[in-house]
Image (cartoon, rainbow, N blue to C red; front, side, top):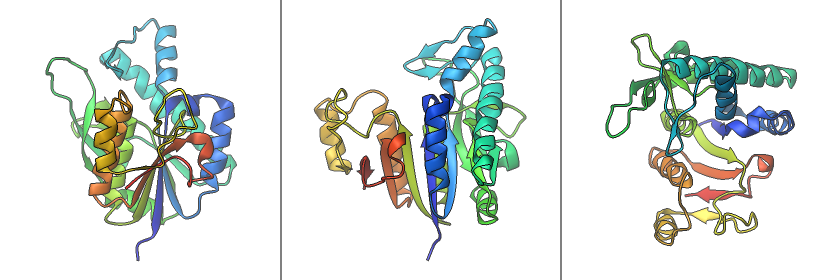
Length: 257
């Protein structure tokens, strides 16, 4: 029987505000068994870039990462945000280790090819070193992974945190009984985006197709659910999309089967 592993992905807004971060990390620390955290930090990167006089360019919600922006996100994601989370987890008695994909070669990616848009130094995940991560996890270490990968040739690449969480879950599914939880500001997949009480508790492929056809699932929720179903196909036992404040009540939120 495989050991259980809980992988939490949490959005930037939640980890960038002291109150929500403290609450989240207390709930995360209370999770039984092995665990791993993947985080974002986009708002902090935008703020620091502005202070340095570097313009932020977004296309369809995705950050264009030129050389100067790459320096910013590396500092902010891999430094400021990551180490703040690690320090707070240590204060809660969790032996956390802050990492990027370059550390121990845990996540390698390819630079995204230029098609209609040149996103710059952005990586699409190619390989997860699941054995290296498993060794750390089984030694009692809790990895805290920033949304940065590397290409194996010396370049850091900015990488979508949702994708990193999904790919990490897929890579570890052969070694652990993996539960993947996406935490963000909403209570789950909603029938009405303005009504937190309209959570759709269960989504399978047929329901997902109908929700997209009806225009209920749109925008950023589409890649979240696409990542979720890819994870299920790769052997992840369950994916949950829920509000960060509901991490201690996993019966809530949307469960993907």
